[in-house]
Length: 185
Image 1 (tube, rainbow, N blue to C red):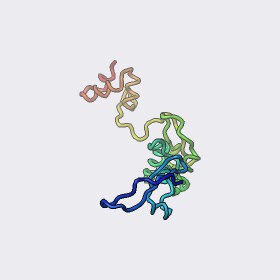
Image 2 (image 1 turned 90 degrees about the vertical axis):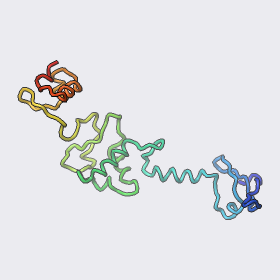
Image 3 (image 1 turned 180 degrees about the vertical axis):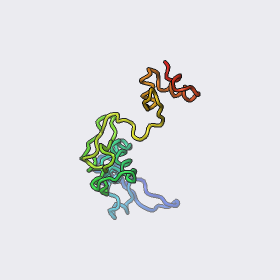
């Protein structure tokens, strides 16, 4: 709705276009050139454009305060690792549908300690094979194994069994101590 005439638009020191102060339906206001009003080019104070941009940025509902949600990050990581393990077609759907299906199947991550885990590593990422698991064990091969009394243990397990700090065991081995000496409290 046009409220009043504003200062004229000057271009190269000459009067060029009339400008009008307009009130928007959202409660905001804007100063608009007359030709933009008459052509219908300007229809809001800018709030409509902001809404369109917000909708484009959140088409799958995964942005909050301009940060990616953990569920979206887990989904993206899963898709990027699809060379290692295939992902079901339902979760690979285009235009944000795949993420929405992923979210519908698994739900939001319950806590920060939960991680996305495949129950059977030999099967693909799919609703029946994935869960949010609290503090899952580290995947892959442990970085270092040592033999203690005929058993192969990770450094962390050996330190816990011996009753010493993991960092202490690592430092001792780094300095060249024997395994037996490093494991003494």
